Image (tube, helix red, strand yellow):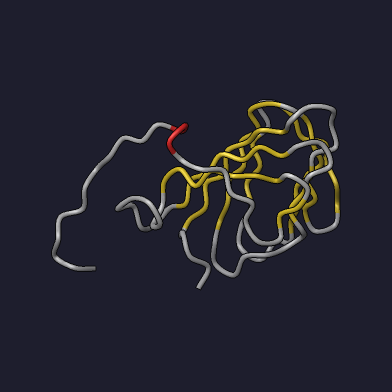
Length: 123
């Protein structure tokens, strides 16, 4: 890391665009709120996601990244190593590296959740 001073910041969620990241389908949208792409934070990727009914992310694993999902609203299916579990408001899911996982909206309304990933890169 360079010698420049890293700066704190404040962002409003409305200022950050929705994106459909690779391997996300059917209206699986996220806002990259804090991370290396838009702040001086380097070690954490913090997002809010909103999946429309039937939207999903394909099953995948991370080599070194750990993740925490916090469901804020809606209902969906979290698949962990092939086992599917219904997740809903106030559920918190934690995933160590190397665990195959996917999440989909199996409900009738938008599935809204936070995702914290560390480190920010899976290299």
